[in-house]
Amino acid sequence: MNVEIAPSILAADFGVLREQVKLVEDAGAKIIHVDVMDGQFVPPLSMGPQVCEALRDMGLHLEVHLMVERPETLQVESFAKAGAGTIIIHAEATPAVDYALDLIRSHGCKAGLAVNPGTPLAIYEEVVPDLALCMTVNPGWGGQSFIPSSIEKVTRLRAIVGDGVVIEVDGGVDAKTAGFCVAAGATRLVAGSAIFGQDDPARAFNDILDAATSRH
Ligand code: DX5
Ligand code: ZN
Image 1 (cartoon, helix red, strand yellow):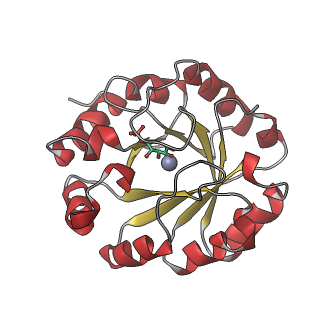
Image 2 (tube, protein in one colour):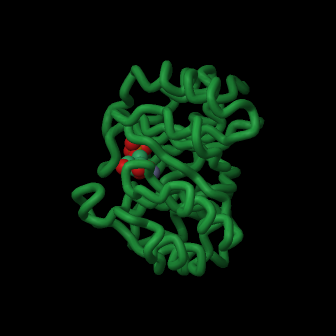
């Protein structure tokens, strides 16, 4: 599986959001990570489906990370209709994980399942998502430090899900941590502040891709 970098717009300048996204698109990005926070599952509020609507005509794959309680009640449908290509729910956010993943697929989207750093991987023995997201920080804020024990967790996750599932890491990913994540089995890396927090997001995107793939 090719390694993909998914820039998170949480760290972007929303006053010029489309220009920011264009910068990473021109650098080769195919996926944009959209962090949705509800003020309950995680303390902050972030963005709603209008942000996907504002980006959907750019033709990039919009990957929506729902850090919200009970996403199956409304948000899955709202973001699918707003142009999401992948929707990721959290195992901790609903007792209806299997139902929610089916619901995502019924809208024609790829179904992702995330776990927080403190959550066991056992859920992946029961349900098989298209994408398994191993959080490498506690969700809620960008710019946090990568939790080192995540590497060993990603290794265990790959052993559980096999080769057919995208394994994604999210939080504290930069050119220093990217290579370790890929070596452990991650195939998609989210990066927010390490891309949009930099003076040259296109260059930062490529630096992380270089580090992830050891291409020079
Ligand atoms: C954290 C979000 C992340 C965040 C990552 O709650 O899910 O996607 O944007 O930000 P960085 O890359 O700055 O750690
Ligand atoms: Zn995220």
